[in-house]
Image 1 (cartoon, rainbow, N blue to C red):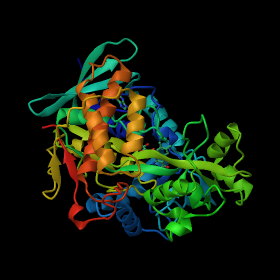
Image 2 (image 1 turned 180 degrees about the vertical axis):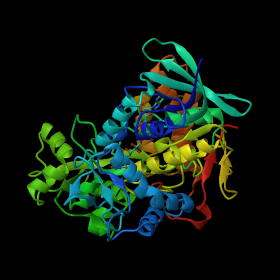
Image 3 (image 1 turned 90 degrees about the vertical axis):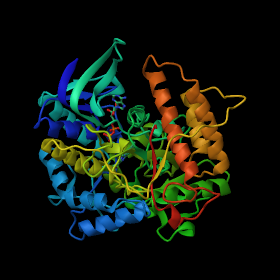
Image 4 (image 1 turned 30 degrees about the vertical axis):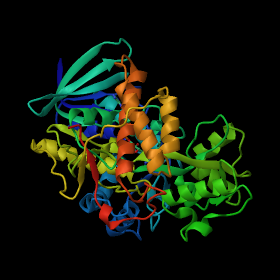
Length: 512
Ligand SMILES: Cc1cc2nc3c(=O)[nH]c(=O)nc-3n(C[C@H](O)[C@H](O)[C@H](O)COP(=O)(O)OP(=O)(O)OC[C@H]3O[C@@H](n4cnc5c(N)ncnc54)[C@H](O)[C@@H]3O)c2cc1C
């Protein structure tokens, strides 16, 4: 058994940035299930939101975030996010993240539901890659120990406090336990639960499953954000076409060339993501097609190729010159708003256990994430974890009395259980727990997921381990969506299409 002050599970922006800060306060180990750079962070295109522009202010950023979150944001967390943003951006600049500039000043672009240009970017549309490469370089030179191809499989506890983590070495198949004072989950999201998604292969909800099994509170699982515009080409994965493309003037047209967004909302292409995603679905249904088109052909060619070099090149590699042709797009699962419930210091309800990044739910996003707030959230709340652990202070998180507490309910026994496997799960989640849901579709999914969970074999390697995590995470998402009998933010039910004031609270799951 080896001992570290801090163990980080995950090597995206959350794991790496937190590890660099933790190194100043003690010994650090990073455990990551693939290579150090395999994560969602690397794929982030648009950038990082921060209220640093001349016409911007933290108050304006707070207002936009609260509006997007649709009544479910934790206002104190949002206030922290916006007021600490500028300092965390300075940290990244000092670490050497090469943000794009105009006339010597950091360039800012517009994204949906932001009231002013507020998004910093690097390498045009390669922001996440620049951040990941910069942070991993610093982690290597800081001599932080990184165990790659190492799967965290269980949170170890003693006398009600975290004591360490159990791991599986994916190269040798051997298990090992590591002890620590502070265990920080930075395991990312769960986009792989859906048939169409923009996420990396690693995004299988492991952190949610690890934390739930250990007794942590899991919240807001009914809110999963679907990105409106992922590339839709036969045989090509749904590569993200960033929001910033619409921010720079990209227009959505249906298969007949008609610009449809003004028919749905006055905010047109820059409405919140859930509104644009649903509008696209309705338009696809109306025209009996499985995609719409994004039009940037009328923008100056050099704007497209210099602002979006990756998107331009990726499409060109697949036979599509986006400066001359319309881009076929459709919605895809993108970002998990819910997760392991933490307070504004990143603490869970289990002493010694923290969570940061996409696996955590700080309350910043509420029912819908404002574009490009997620990487900012990582920086701000990871820094606060280090403040908390430095003081040595760590107690359980009190939950709001208005929140609803649940355990996973029993489900009826199915006579015929469909075959499980990740492809079946992805189709089930996409068809029944997708952009548009209702009681019938959710109940069907909940019954099947519960039946699969009962029959899970003991996992022996990464695939079976991830499948069991996806089934548990899928159950939490589906049961939460069934409980919430209203539509709010990213959660839209055809049987309860309205927002209801009676539902202005959170749903929290625990194991017992
Ligand atoms: C295509 C795309 C574009 C995006 N664009 C933007 C954007 O422009 N702006 C923005 O703010 N956000 C954007 N996002 C969201 C943002 O990138 C993510 O929310 C953020 O990068 C998550 O960082 P993370 O460190 O929490 O997770 P990740 O970067 O996904 O890292 C998770 C890490 O955990 C490891 N891991 C998982 N489970 C285990 C386990 N059991 N054992 C060991 N290791 C494990 C993984 O291997 C990985 O290293 C985008 C996301 C995608 C997919």
